[in-house]
Image 1 (cartoon, helix red, strand yellow):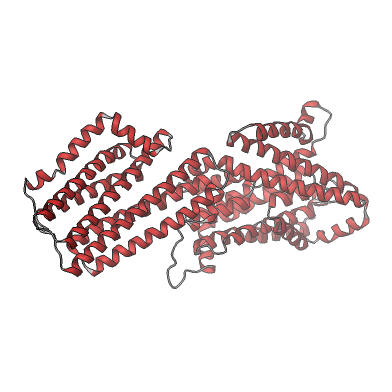
Image 2: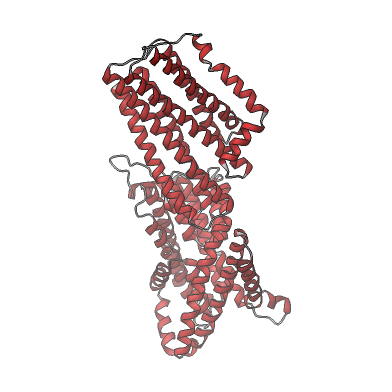
Length: 591
């Protein structure tokens, strides 16, 4: 083996790792739409969780990626630790698919049909199809499909280059002497652990082992312990991802580590006893690519069979190793690990946005309560809610911008844009709640009160605002098109109420029944209430837009107002319900 073989080996390894990386990333994006529905099955039972972890990992070709996602799910409260254990076990089995695919390179036959199954035969075709999809298609999903094919072709070319470069090692005495140390199972486990920890992929390290197997000098006795160690090494990625996570997030990563360490310890002991007592001849045979794939799968299935019946014990052990804090921790609302699965990340964003929306509506309602029932506790509650709403807008906006910067589908991109618009409207609604509180505090400080007809007018418009808040919140939470369609006519009625109340205020000023100080506060109140209803209109418009796959908010609202008989009927109904004349006759009140 000369310098050129070493360069070829380095190039092949680089292509292999790069191909596996880009293929895995593209598979994650391509499968993202399905992951949300799969997540819903996690809560069914132990078998469903196991199969889901197996299926996801088989698709994205990385147990590390699946486990990192699981840590993110647990950290964000999308999954319990008990559910995570089952998924992680399934992921360990699913990761063995890669070794089976790579074992196809070992097919050797003159039959043309069998030869077509060799990667060297069909990989060029996949690369050609992949480059066409990637370069000439504008559809994101087709581009991802092209990237998957190109990634697979790249890793297979890398695999062949590695195999060709190391094939000459069979005659190198130094290589044979190096392999002697791996006849010790403990050294084999350590070698597999270190290699996999460095490249952070058990699938890739198994592929490297398969490439070395073409020398004919790697026996099953050497390969099996190395495979066991590879399962431990792959835990490094999940452990790193758990840094900064919640207690349950750290526990999920610890489950992955303990599962593999316990499984390796038990089956390595069994392996050593069998080797010592029975010395089976096949352990001295040269390992084939297919044989390594079989050993990899069998080992992971045996580990799952060992741990699955006592999953509850494993959970208890992990909780003892990572105990609860003395003071309960605040669960993070969003986790950057979810960015790897955009559809699930958006689902989580929607859940957090719902919490923000509910808090925003509560803030404005509390602000209206302060107008006729001010207390220091109520004032503190309004300001606390408004600050938390600001916090929600900050974390949601930052997370959605990060998500939008990734390669996501058009539907996910539209949903992210919609949520960005919506959280801005909900944040402004909470701001108006504080504005109302400040008006109540100013009235209290100056000894002003609304009396008579003015108080009835204020009660009328606040009742209308309470209803429009409930309608817009319900429309957003449930994607309720009917509720959304009722918002715009009520918003128009609130606009009219504001103008009528301004006119009545002017009449009171002319009659000397209203002070200038009270008049300024009155004007500010009407402005805050009317603008809050405007934001409700924007929220309903976003809900309607998503049903029509449109992002033109003003056009949608204009269409609702001008072209809908339902709008006219609803407007008349609300105008009658919140008529100032109906509420207080023709009286002009006092302020």
